[in-house]
Length: 253
Image (cartoon, rainbow, N blue to C red; front, side, top):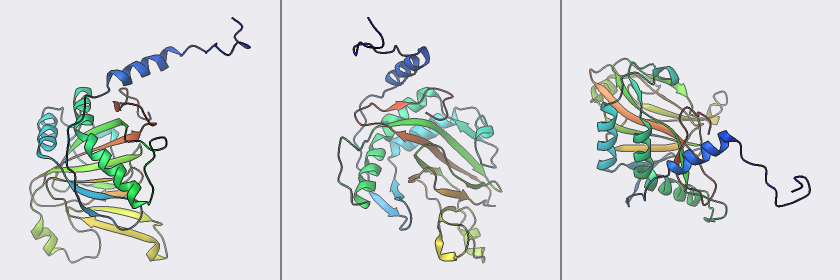
């Protein structure tokens, strides 16, 4: 067969590409559970950033699995000034994408509606590849500086948090209150109206989903206790492709 002239000829896939394709198909999850996800709040500036409650089974699964992980094994790859950040296992990630699927569906549908766009199966997708997933055990005086994430979508799920209401009441400043997460959008310079900040005091059982490049930070609290939260990143896949876990150590799938 003439490789240059015969249109039937296709260049064979490289070994690395074949292995990646096999890995992605192997990691495709079983059918996702049915969940009724309801929007509980939203940032009304910048991109679509909704707040919702998280089903008890997802929270329990994340906490139980997270407690079995190696303390601090994720510290060197994250921005947080925390002593205990843990990366979930590949098996945990496979379980998670099945449980998390209803929330991704809900976010995509909401984002399209919010943007005034009609869903088109040829252009839009609910399929995703999970890049990373980790759990934070944030103690008093620790914090997360302003940062962004990799991928396209990110989230934070609050599994547990100490009561910092007295700290909040005692704070008399004008910046982000103790223990709050702050989302920033716009130009961090004058004029002031071009930069927007939204502060939120974490509540157990709630989750924010947001574009990965949205700037955000978590302020320290000084009440004794541990705040436990789960975050991660994903890419949206092309239409008609399965959900998957990115190959291990592939930070930019």
